[in-house]
Length: 384
Image 1: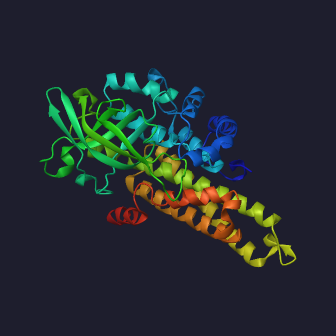
Image 2: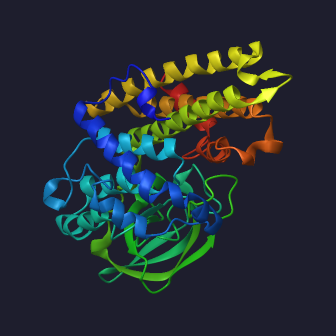
Image 3: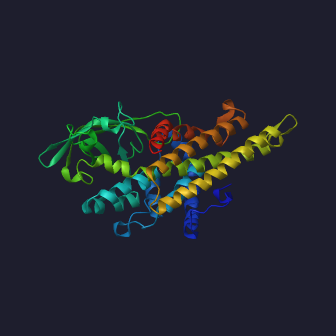
């Protein structure tokens, strides 16, 4: 059972597919056997990061002069697909698909040389801290501040729902460097905060309804003193930087949830062919065939759309609206697949006995990750 059975893929080259086999082998050896213990602990062991870095599974798009492989986003997408299909709760996509590009695109030469090789090797784990207890999708309303004090910033505030929060060694903190700026977004900057800075504290590792092994955390900053050279890019450009990276961030989510939906479908086909009921096999019931046929059709459409979006992104043509549409459509598809496949497993009462359980719990989080789909609809609607 693997993604090799999905027909007609056109986003990738032979080199991409060869890389897929290496990723898949690594996950089966180093990740899959540990998923249960990670979920019970509520966190992934940090040692997996350096192991992944050693085979090029972290930040493959980083230029060679900074320790990376200088590859295209297609390699990131391969990793995202395989991690999701294998059901392994690794936080690599945040580092590879989001954080490293901020540093590559906007970081100073000193910041690139200091951090990118460590992100590639897995020696440094990163997080990006945007969401606050009272501020979700309206980033302009954040309260975390970074006030100037000589040649330093003094960072104060709190963040929540931060992926990789417990493991992170470096946090990209979205803060207001000019609270009086009009409009408010012009006063926002991204500040690099190392986790060993005095005044930085980790809060709870949050108990969620899915993605049990993901260390999604509260973070607190109490008079954290960092040099002004830790500002990523230009002061006051943080909001613009965040918005400019949205197509890839949303595409990354779409890639993962499509693979997760495919895994749920494949597991359900196998289950219904084995499960007996009413002196027959569940797979042979007409209703089962109708449900599976409907889902298979939608998954085929999903893969075609996903490959279209990946190709556009590789060509530098994917727009923020198209990225939002990809996230909207594929997370809704994942939710539908999980729901109907769950019913074919006999309902929630028996769910935890089967492989689909982990994918279903992850789907409940993926559907709203990065902003609710109602917000995605609003963004798309504004472009009409």
